[in-house]
Image (tube, rainbow, N blue to C red; front, top):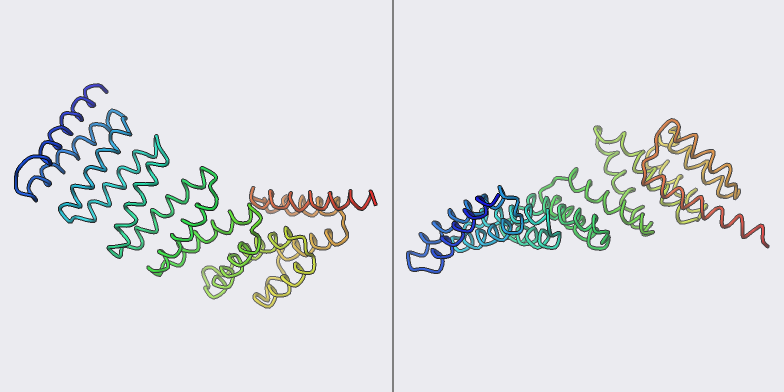
Length: 288
């Protein structure tokens, strides 16, 4: 480890000397870039991630001086990947620098990829507002490249996070729109029922049984086969249990569905919120 750090420091000093010294502008930055690449790799071998990240940032500046924007963006990505191990803030900053370069170059798929990385980091930090912002940016950039599948994967993350923080209408709109798109594609149409189920669960969370019933009618118009699915019956039966304020019936319906089709943690969490609201209403009615 010590040897790698020592070599990294020596190579970085040589690179700094090249940058600050005399010489042909292009040549000195090319020489410095080569030295900085070697230096960063030595710091990586030593697992000195902050040092490696800092050197990759210097390397990016050299590439910018040489007007090598693709290489500059790649160096920022290398820096971000190092900082990810020690500093989320540092990683985000480098990813953002790379995204700006890729956008300027019209490399939208690359910009989208790293906006998604930023969004995932914000999600880990539970900064949901920023996570949503960057998943939306990623979706936009993927759409510029006509990568609708990748764009929709980011939109679904927006819907998932929005619903977790009670922005149900936003989530519903996304799930319904993606269901519509899926029904137009023979390869994706069987996934539409899953999106409609998620939209329906969000409708249940809003606590308006009439809205749920109306939504189910719309989903039936959207996909005539939906009324024959387990997902439709599940939502319809839950709406009835809510209308009847029957917690035991609600619980039984969820258990039965889960025994055949395992509910993921997102659905289970939202359904628990609905159940707790139903329990509170039942208790309130008992007290009056």
